[in-house]
Length: 118
Image 1 (cartoon, rainbow, N blue to C red):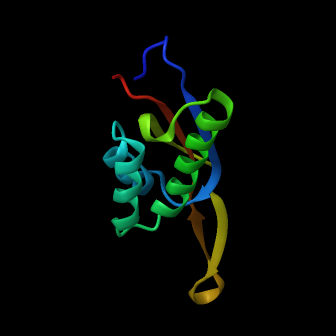
Image 2: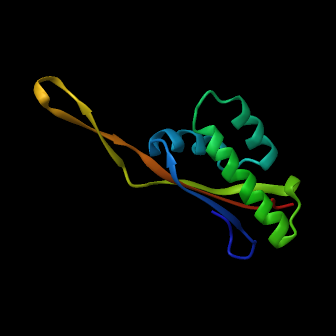
Image 3: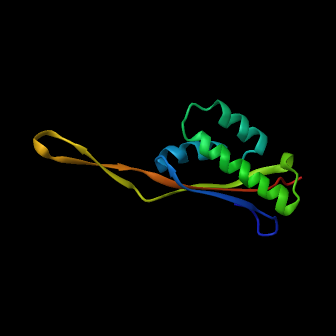
């Protein structure tokens, strides 16, 4: 985690369609990396969840640049987490008039960036 003295810029995406475990698999790979390295990694990963994660990462960096005046080339991903959101409940017809419940998972993605220690 980041120290209390360094500023941290946060960005959140809520109700993103996708399972928490699949999003965490990607977040674990980029946590602790520089902004540039994380963007390159996300571009070439074969997972569907990299789209929303890239969007949140760019938003966190834009927040750091605009609100705190930090240089994007000096930023490191200090915090990246995914929490479970509400499941959308859908029903699929089955044999003999029965209904089969389907839960479509959602998640909340949070990313924080801090300046790199020189």
